[in-house]
Length: 135
Image (cartoon, rainbow, N blue to C red):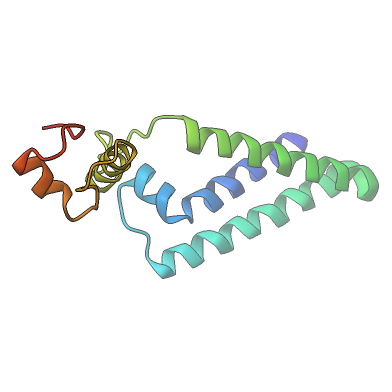
């Protein structure tokens, strides 16, 4: 039952993570709709409840509460590290164009270039007015 509790905690926090726009796009390669976001969050809360129920069933009310919260903490930490540090294997592994533009915009602003706005990046590349942007 403790292993089941840990598994449910990890699954619940994976669902919470995929209910965010950034991680959903990065991991699954699709835009997150409002209905899907609501559905993923509901399933995640069911997973949290099932994790706590499994912990209470396995170890009683006092130690079950401690074990359940510990399992939820482990699940949250493991999923946080995985979603933020593991490379995405989806169709968008080369990087999103918007993210690339933002990083070049930040780099250009750090060097004090005038044409550092997101709309002027293509113009700056064409006219080579900013030497800090890649060609």
